[in-house]
Length: 268
Image (cartoon, rainbow, N blue to C red):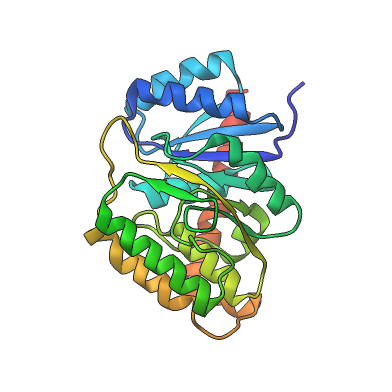
């Protein structure tokens, strides 16, 4: 009997090859709650897929899914959250930088009522080990500024390792389509709506295999957009829903879920 997942773990991937195997194995060992692990890839020929399928053969919680929104990490994360079957979606990276033992802790915060639960490198007990120094400085400065002055509820709004209420995401939509700015977008939207955001400390480790695909120059404008958005006046859900980009994002999500459900029905 297949249990309905309580957590959807969303992992955006791009040609990770066999490096995805230890990542998935760590997650599968750490998550004891009923879960699905969505390995979201942009193209059928992605080198991650055959290795993800090997793990799936041993553990059916793993689900490789093809992102139909367009290439790039933002579209992969957006697609993964949009097709998630659980009430909580946890985004984590394929590079081993995040601690999979904290997935359930983040999910439990959402289960208790917050709409965004952040793993924070910059609160007491948190730490960032490695990574480009300039990127660390920008991230820490942005996090502290948003926490102190916009009252966003976390000192690490830019970290991608977060849990979200999927019902909240489907109400507000995800507009980001460039890089990894979804974490700050949804945190900013929750802040403007006066919905609860919480954090727990995490120790982030720079990836040991492969190269980071974070392009600070290309992604910075999108980060700045949502950084500024967090400081606006309070919004109602109805006001936020009237944003054209938000409406389009919700429509994309409905279509993606319908198409995925239809494909699964045909395959079964």
